[in-house]
Length: 277
Image (cartoon, rainbow, N blue to C red):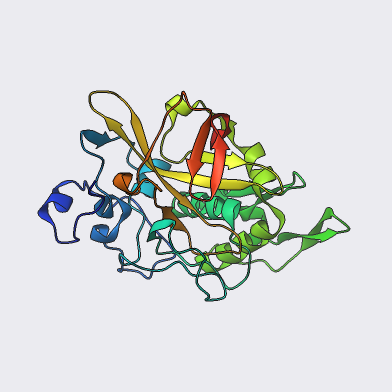
């Protein structure tokens, strides 16, 4: 099954509507190229079309995420190679940081947070495992926190401007004290039959895992859905698009609501573990 089109392919170009409303604030200004996006790289399975998503929605934003060149290896936060190198079909063009923080749930938080920051920064907020709700607007406004004997305590900090660099430091603090348990509590359970871009397969706990649905395609005759998935893992590593172990599927995973399990390369979820922001 073909999964990609060359960046200069007329087929790929014709398949891409305007991605201009989207912003990816971590990229240097003027460097975004829609021909290097998820939608350009991954053609839908035969007989399918991409699910309709509203322009400006989280699903639309995910569909046009920037990718690193084809064949890029996945690296850990310390520069070492991920082991194994056989589970990814592409690597997102977004940093992983230099600390062992941006793991599985954190990658979901990162992408959701970046989307919200690109639209309305003051609406960004995430819960810690303790249940405390930490708003970015409060954090850059001087209302920080510290953790003392497992308890989250308010702590004043310098007032800052809501720049992306400040936002990135805010996220690192969220990553430190949030995880699959807190993220799962923030999300709403959804039936697998209704899977949409932006949904999350998640199991809260230690161990737990989270995988983000980047895109969804539907078969025009059968209505069957196929999904593109992204994850980070442990140790913290570059966010990557998962490769189906069934090589005939490429990066697309068939959704079978009758199956009690949904299998990804490094985790098996229960069908009840799909949730939505």
